[in-house]
Image (cartoon, rainbow, N blue to C red; front, top):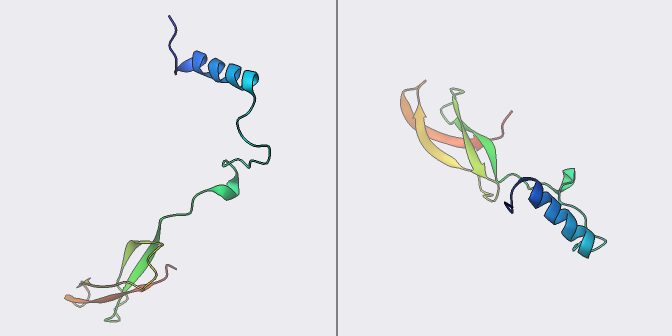
Amino acid sequence: MRVLGYGLFSSLNSLHHTLQFGSLLPDDYKGLNRMGDKKKKATVFIRLVSAAGTGFFYVKRKPTKVTEKLEFRKFDPRVNRHVLFTEAKMK
């Protein structure tokens, strides 16, 4: 019984195909498995700092494609109120 697509038969089949027909890639092809060719992160972590000056902050993820600074009105437990939180860089 032959099971295609799994285990030894699959790898032997692909090896036979490569030996029979050669590589399908051009000679100047650079592989995608190199260290410098990885995808960039889609999000970054930002720090939302309280405008009340208490030093309280939230950490949030932001898409890298968003260029403007984020501002949220969130709860600051140190002053027991909702205040404006603005984006700052992570330390």
